[in-house]
Image 1 (cartoon, rainbow, N blue to C red):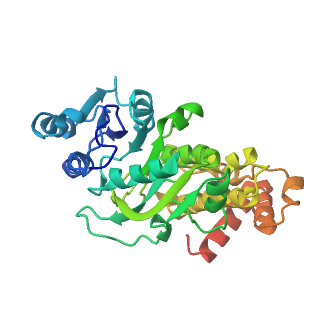
Image 2: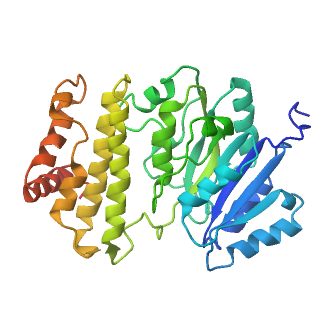
Image 3: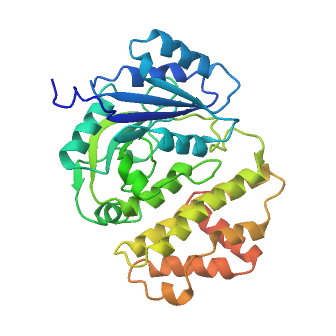
Length: 355
């Protein structure tokens, strides 16, 4: 028996926001209840006031499963959103570590045990497992994101994780907050909370968190199964109409990610992080332009131009040693008349096959 199995304190809080996931929730909650570890775990389920039978299923397992007593249900006053549900988990959690799980995804039987062992061995503030994308049936699919499966790396120096995450323009690090075991006192010490957002609040949280992490571990073991849903809120391809407010929200989130680099000017990875922020916004703009005819009401050019504006001054960009011309290009596009700015974005988007 492992030396951590007899503790009375809660070792890990597993938090799940739940809203209208009836067809997924059995697999998700069972993956939590059937964890192989003997650690003392609490499961916080945030009832975000959905309209289906998701919570009935949770309550069924709460009363019938041998580990059902570990489930604590907290009901929101009304449907607020995933960002608020996640914050409620951070506030209510009693565990030494916190693990966030989306309630349409599921985890491996040994997920928590593997992450916790690494966390304790290396005194880690965060341990990141590898992710396998799957379809609704649980079949592996290739979404072209190889960085979801990562090598084994231990970080013990300030800025080391952030440097790894930004050592090149292509993604090297998963910036989604789920499938990460995070020490609660680290979250509390840095006053980390999720920003209000319709989607991608996890990416905003990670943008805040990653520069603060000193001790971290990445492991190659698949501990999380990320279910790709065609009808998800952030997926445009299967909808006839896309609301303009949704596009504007996307631009707002990605503006946060690109503007964050202004706080990192003293970091070695600053120039790469700044460039990646601009490229992410370029992806978002290209997605909007590709689907522009379906956006209602119409997406105006000035909104696109404002979205692509560079967060830095020209004199700051000219001092770049890396990626100077990419950033100069974005800076110029963001300061041209809106129509010309959009025409250039469409041109480059088509060259990259994003449009």
